[in-house]
Image (tube, rainbow, N blue to C red):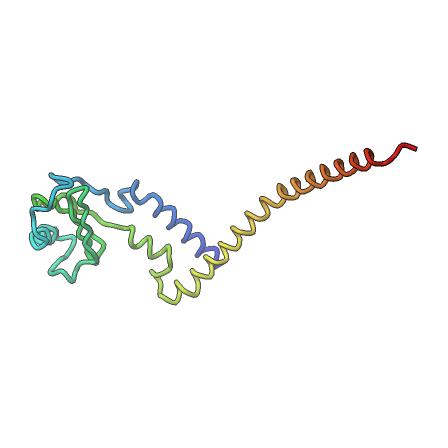
Length: 174
């Protein structure tokens, strides 16, 4: 029962991760800055100050960040706090464009098992993945097996017919 619950969790989390760019609930959409693809006019310190102005992020200094994502094609910089809140700052104006909660990191941790503990990831989720791989491979084998057998039977029947025709042609009539 525990394995079934774990597999259901992995599948559900995987489905959410597949849709993370389509569902703002999972991962906030990326907005466009004032000057996409331009060289940022603001320093990282100025953009950090704009992100820190959002109380949801609870940023006091750089160590409170989980990561910083620079999106030059969108003209923004994303500041992701350790508490999973994200601020998107315009790289050319330094304006705070969007603040939203980011669930994709938690969902990914649930998906790979690291949410629970490192040993759960290695000794529960990894073996389950191996079992799924074996089940998939055996399913592919069982799917193609009848097709291969049918092709072999046809080839053997054609060889027997050719051999019978050859024998009939070389055998003198009595």
